[in-house]
Image: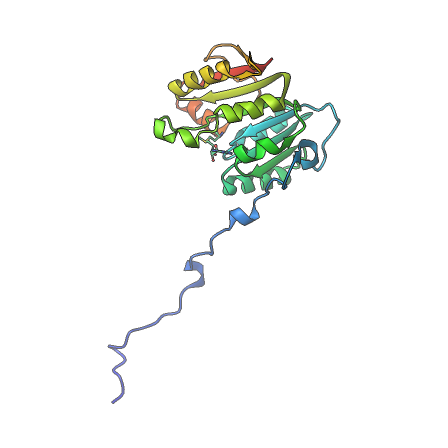
Length: 228
Ligand SMILES: C[S@@+](CC[C@H](N)C(=O)[O-])C[C@H]1O[C@@H](n2cnc3c(N)ncnc32)[C@H](O)[C@@H]1O
């Protein structure tokens, strides 16, 4: 007997517009640091004059500061490093679209990239905006700002160079300032501290988290340390 069409399961063709798109493989698309030693200037398509100040931003996230800083400091060379491949890729694409040849956005773990960056004492500024938003002790291992990080920043900053850190978590600001103040190279303090927690951001650019804190009228705690 022929099947009754009214009781047969219906298989309707899937509307192509409703199909789930394939996942975007940011991990494969993002720009990565080269293997081995990394020559800072060789990362840039147009490195500019040899005396252009070199700057580094760690953990740029959605990249607002990196792009705004590129505009406010057109004579500098700025390297950004972000561990999340998605943001690394999207920000590198954006800076290319906007013709920002003095900026490079790399995807990767700054803790693995910084020890390979050369030459020593090449940087004028290091920016770390709203890092490590976890304040529980158990999250200590994930933190970027530890003594290994400060050792690399001390090696890379020129004398008089600036390490600028900001956060909206007061306890983290206190802890980071104490750690930076206590950090020594060959028995001598590596940094001297400038200004109070409520000093303004002097760099003509704001990070995404900073802009959000401003909109919500939340305090931002800032630490400016100068390499001795
Ligand atoms: C709280 S978000 C702040 C993002 C941005 N700086 C801002 O202020 O809007 C911290 C950022 O640091 C990045 N990050 C964390 N650990 C990192 C590491 N080891 N290397 C590079 N980026 C890292 C995170 O992926 C995240 O984008």
